[in-house]
Length: 359
Image (cartoon, rainbow, N blue to C red; front, top):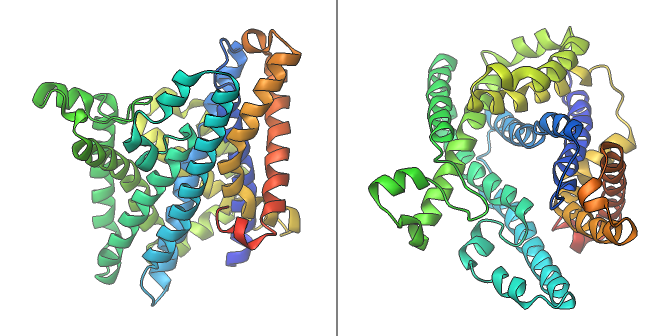
């Protein structure tokens, strides 16, 4: 299957995944949500695992076939510039918002945790994804060592199982990242080093460690799928049944969490979505709209929270009961509206070279 054809399906799923992200965030701050809405958000949780799986699979696939080293500096630059720019944007926006609302305590609260502002995406809760992806990007660079030494898929598979097991232990023991607060390994520190998270260097190291442990299974699964001994065989297999893989994606997202451990379910959701995207690509025709949504997905992710907050401010003024009585239909319409506005804004901004650097 030709590479351009595969990417068509990936772009389609990117569009679906970014819409799912907006669904996850549209109810932020609401006092109550409908029961049916929780079923929709449960399904939408495939989005971040899909973005992680896609980013690492595409990067490692190139490493297996490229004779050039992994362009770490340019990859980091493509994450750090948007991260700095959007952190500043959301920080300025919130200062202005709280000042207009005459709420100086919330303005002061923004600056009470500078470590979070600088390293953990503290300016806006969704920005955590960029330092998470940055951590994974550093790990991808390390895979060059295994690829250069032609590590067997069996060995990579064994390490993958170990990494998933470690990540599962971190999750079930409550040692994962806690938000708000942006701290990690709280139960472990409580037993061994009470107050350890008050040390900025230790806190930064532990959060980075949790992010690394989260990214590692995705990276190792990507190495398995892109391994020369397996790559062409599984591609040929899934291409025969694209509809089946779409069904598997839907069923897995509906019921996988009922039977699978947390870590397995999370990583598998991302890769089942990616495999379904690749499987349907052979049946799709590339067009400008699909290509544009793929290009804009990262920018939509970065900008959509601004429109979510603006929408909620307006909605509460127009419909006083919105905050406590929003229906599933209303939330879906709001999600679609914000998706379209964010997409249109991102697409327009991408025509400017300066804005393109941060989108």
